[in-house]
Amino acid sequence: MPPTSPLPLKNSVTVKVAYEPGEARLWTGRGIVIDLFRFSNTVCALLKSGRKDIRVYSSPGHAAAVKALEKGADLFSEIEFPPEVDKYDNSPHTALYGSDASRPALIVTNSGSPAVMALGCAPEILIGCFANMPYLAEYCCKLPMDTLLVPACLYYDRTHVEDFICARSLADAIEGRDSFEAAVEEIHSSSRALDFMAYRPETGKKDLKLILKKGNMAVLPRIQMQDVFGKVEDAISEKT
Image (cartoon, rainbow, N blue to C red; front, side, top):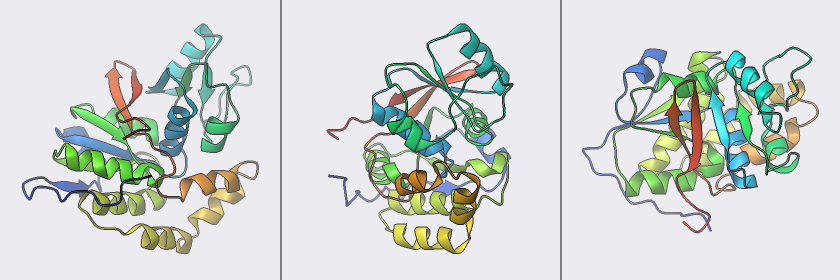
């Protein structure tokens, strides 16, 4: 069962949401990337599916080059690649249920990947969403550190307001407050969920069923930066 009552943070610990891209680049505490509608949930789904080798790439060019070299790897991205580059869409439902968990996973996206790369000075980079919210909050409370929640839309399209809404709700959860239901209502009121389903007719509804639930993926992606990519590991286990 998901943890329900995170311990209160010490007053000396700062938890805040970034509203400008430069904030992440200068941050030297824990950074948490939120790209709610796809990247965050896709990475969580890849971990939950049992993938052992998951890498977030800094650019489509790097990801495509590695994909060409590693014939047994899967590429996940919403970015348009040349026809000869075989890939999956950046879909959490596909990552969890429609792909081979025994293969390496490469992921590069319009907003999530740049947000991860922007946190180059952070000693710890996590990926958050509603799906792992209780586990993220518990982890941050057990290991307190100044924390910046980074909405990935800062690096692509600020009108993707679901990232800001989720980031604020995650900040509340870390500080012991529950604003999940209000956050989901605000996302629906923004029409972004309808837009998402309209542009993703094949998996949109299935993706949203995963995306807008709390605590349905007991994983916590942590990124270990390695030059042009970040290696994903799970900061917790299913038994946490």
